[in-house]
Amino acid sequence: MSRTSYALAALAATALTLTGCTSTADDKTPPADLPAAQTLLVDGAKAMAEVKSAHFVIDVNGKISGLSLKRAEGDLTQAGSAQGTASIEQFGQAIEAQFVIVGSDLWLKAATGGFQKLPLAAAATVYDPSAILDPNRGVAKLLSSVKTATTQAKETVDGKETYKIQVEPDPVALAALIPGVGTGVTGHVWLDATSKQLVKGEFNIPAKGSDPAGTVTVTFTKYNDPVTISAP
Image 1 (cartoon, rainbow, N blue to C red):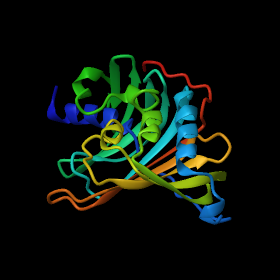
Image 2: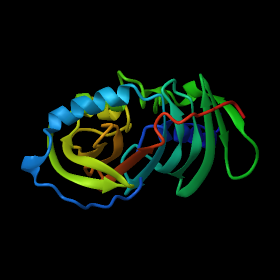
Image 3: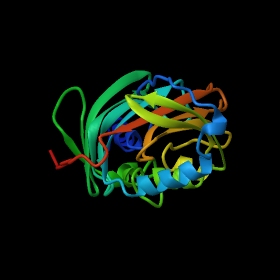
Image 4: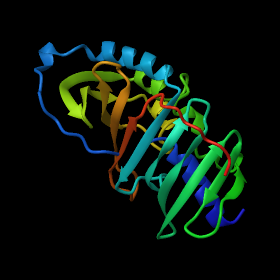
């Protein structure tokens, strides 16, 4: 596989890890009147473990060590199938690609040419796309393993009433979703006030070596909508 092809394979796999829409805040509620963070996270983990499909958007702000992804958007299923578009910065250039993942096969399409079929194993060391909605490794695991948490507010995000929770995620659980991150990550998650599903997550990645601090943001919508993903 050429260097560029491997980079694109890594892109597609990494794109599914994760982290971006903006949110608007209103109707602030005093913390004393808000549900306990641990209760919300337990409910959130249970809700996410039952999700079968979702639409995701990821934005990466800043240069994060080990993560060349800049933006990704698409649909994915609990079984690990996915399709969408992604952008990475590779060798000083922006690379745009469409991706489709079904089973152990990955199809990529750059700006020119058609889809190229590659083994998903070529990017397995970067990320396993089935992790995101996997109840034992993905978002559900992340929510259930948070080290410390505080409910901060009730906010509206993309038209949904949510609870904003400040979290210190478990590094191992977070690394399954954002490859390359180490310790010291802090962030916030916004859980739907009714369903307790994750609406948005924002994680602050500390500086590492010559790379400055950065932010990874991921949003989820269209939970359990019918999704058909097939090979191109």
